[in-house]
Amino acid sequence: MAFSLNDLNYEKDSKERMPWEHYMEEYKNADPAEIAQRLEIPYDEEKKVFTLTMLGTEYQITYPDFQVSHTPDDKGFYPLESLIYAKILTIRFLLHGMTSTGTGVYKTYREMPWGEVYLRQFDGRCIKRLAFSYGMRLKDFRKIMEHLKARPVSHGDIAYEVEIFPEYKIQMILWEGDEEFPPSSQILFSDNFPVAFQAEDMAVMGDVIIGSLKAFLAYINE
Image 1: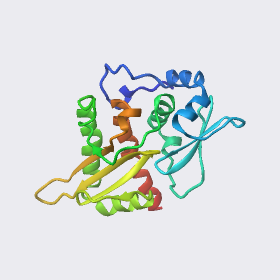
Image 2 (image 1 turned 180 degrees about the horizontal axis):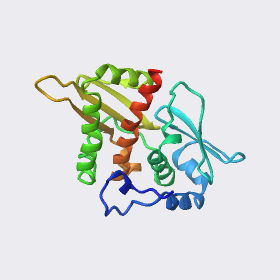
Image 3 (image 1 turned 30 degrees about the vertical axis):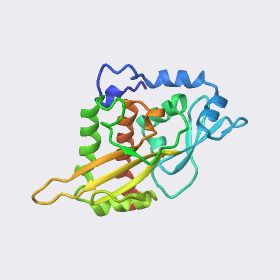
Image 4 (image 1 turned 180 degrees about the vertical axis):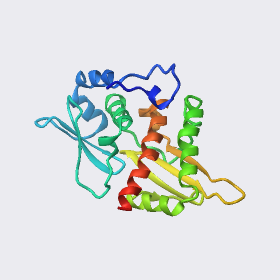
């Protein structure tokens, strides 16, 4: 089935928006040894499988057909197996990403080199969605983050850092709402993100993470 960022209501004139079939064709024609070397990730030539960690779970991704499985852990939900936009984000990372380590500085979406691209969509689909989903439910947010073994950081009323891919780190910050003020949030990215990701990747990334939180909580509460 074809899929594009238009399905997520992002801008219609994106040069980078391509259907899943386009990425699969590019993936099939890629050199797996070059991908493994560029990203410094394991590739089993005999089994034709990459190993890549995403949100703390170790996944196996086959080449050239991009079949995904995970190493058993206690997460209970596996976005790379379940969400098409997680697959698109990952295949783009394999095709065009780079290994990189941040300097310890974290930036908002707006502060990225292309920060005005998709800013309105990112604010609505990610920043506001995080605030109004968990700004009055800090206990649930803490429960999910602890389940993910996320690192607590000292921002807002509660904040945690997750690692989407190795060395690419995201901090999610919440300020609790009350009768007088609505909840608010912020999402910060380690400053190495522009090395490997474009504006639409970052927007989809927020969808992948925030969209997964509900599923993680449902698993915890089973």
